Image (cartoon, rainbow, N blue to C red; front, side, top):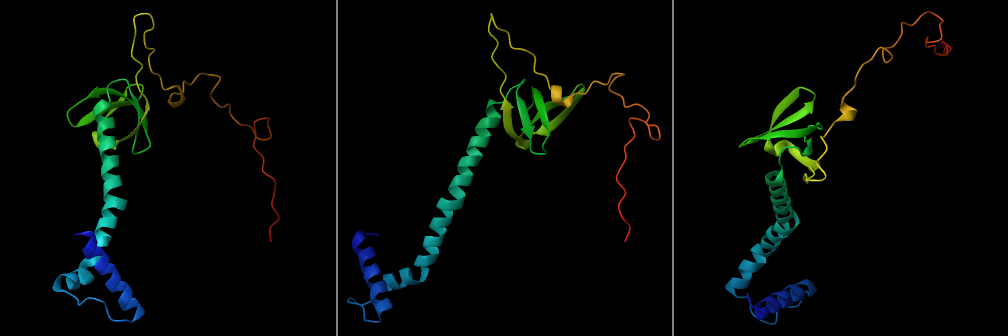
Length: 162
């Protein structure tokens, strides 16, 4: 399409909107544009507003997955935090607690929480720990037996019955 055909098309639309006859007779090609022009514009708008950003996001996610390695802490799509311990062709082995490892598909890794720090000679990388996911029970952590009216008893205010 040239600028001249676009300007002729715009002039015809303006002339028809004002109710005046068009300055140039309508050609067969412009009738095609009148019918399918809005549809073509909608397809182009959908491409730039929906398809292109989604494709860009998908490429970034594929790059993120290709850069993952053992020791990286990740957030899975299910909301579970874990540490990658092994990488296979189509999945990762993720440690989610002490002695609990699960295999997840690569696409279920949503974000990287912390990359494994590269170990140097003078500063080796510390082991990654999930302290907030572990709870070590000791004798002082266990709840004592609750006695009726004792200091550990829970009381609720009485509500009036209507």
